Length: 274
Image (cartoon, rainbow, N blue to C red; front, side, top):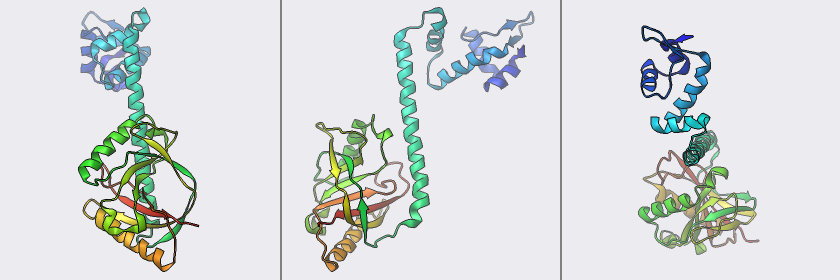
């Protein structure tokens, strides 16, 4: 048998916690001697680990009592289903956070490979993207609202697909004067087709794209994009290229315009007509 302090150390909890759980009849010691000292068995570690995990999930002592009553065939199905749903939600959130951390590490490793403001031909494979409704107002308020609705709508899918995201802009003749007022939409690389009133699924054709990478930050994002488009337009003119009206603005890093982003490199690319 283990003294309460020894058991608390093995269970990675505190003596006070074990006393409270005993007083609340949630987790009782295996034995209490005549002097009132509590003692525990090694095999009780499994039960206390389960209880501590449920507490981390936010369950109250009364709720844990109900869950623990499963051994008595009294545990309510609804509570267990709610608990399972809560666990699945946390797993989903943790997977997304893990993906974001992996992406940040990848961005840091790849940043030195970018050739900013130097046009190049980029070969894309066929890919499919989720697309938001069309927007004609690029105010930060509207973009943020649309971003929130778009990703909330896709919440069940975004954790299992690629990290590629950005904007699709209608920009005939790369008219820079019209760029800030062009029709555009949010896009996100898709994992399965979604087509409803808020989201559609579109194809990015395979082929050669004329592209330029631009640096982005909260203070100079618009300026940097305009500079990149100016460089891109000059290259297209100088090399007599024919491009479509679609500008794909792809986040190679995290989009600095949204919360929690730390850095961003944007690829501006347009399909080359054959």
